[in-house]
Image 1: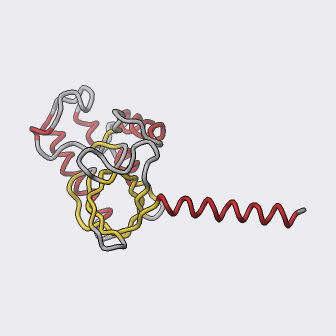
Image 2 (image 1 turned 180 degrees about the vertical axis):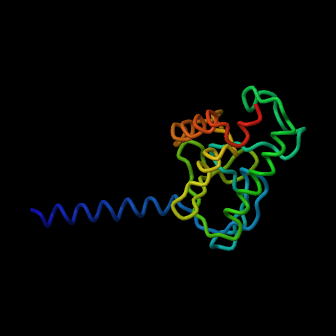
Image 3 (image 1 turned 90 degrees about the horizontal axis):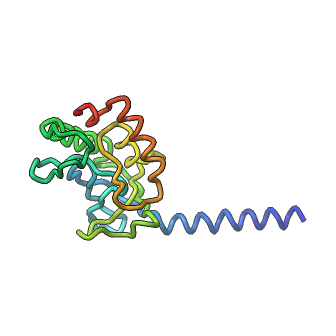
Amino acid sequence: MRVKVAVILILLLFLSGCINRENNIQGKVVEVIDGDTVYVKLESGEKVKVRLVGIDAPELEEELMRPGEYGNITNTSCLLKYAKIAKDYLKNLTLGKEVVLVIDKYQGKQDKYGRLLAYLYLDATDVNELMVEKGLARVFYEKKFEKIKEYLEKEEIAREKRYGLWSCS
């Protein structure tokens, strides 16, 4: 009986590992566009543009900002400063590093601009979540995604402590 249970457990673990590997894409960050978009060179050699799912960093150009996008923050020069800080932070953290991209089950694989939508993991760190935690991006709550609850909790703490862009208000 114990042997059968052990075999079933091992089989389940193996199958779950296979499923997870299919949803994971490995590659190396080769360029950082801004605080929520990077280029990743996949193991196949293909270079893909990746939009970090669930987050939205400030735009690097004032004319691309939308009023009310960051709640009551109206200080666009402060947001522009944090747009650059977010890009630099993401660049220093990920550029040239091996990463794992994980597709969100609600978002689909691509956005309307053809960018791959993914959670970006560096080792065991969810980089998307880290950007929110540091106050370098807000939660992109306009679309449903798997980790919205966790990200909103991190954003709430960042807002309360006035981390990063939340110091602009």
